[in-house]
Length: 110
Image 1: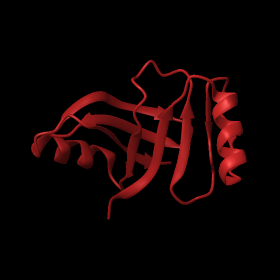
Image 2: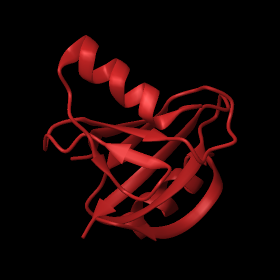
Image 3: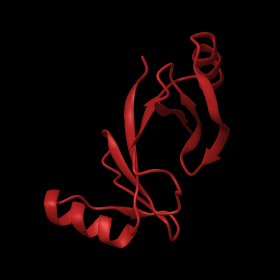
Image 4: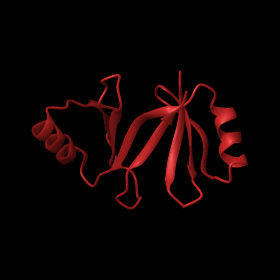
């Protein structure tokens, strides 16, 4: 069953965002390059994306078992693919907009 797996936030300063979440909630982050960091709890994790030029809006990420089938289902349901399937450390994902214009992503882990 598909489930929310990840929440990605665009941030203006990765170090400051890491400091804030560590101080406020005790979370620790793993760095993935100079612009990205993420919690690695194995539950619903948080990614901090300082390379994003997006409006400050969260990106909910849904974990799926079959990425291509999920993309086809999104399109059949009336969603629009905004970022085609791409690989990242740990898996592959695509971004889409739902029928109300909300941007989400679907990912399949390696």
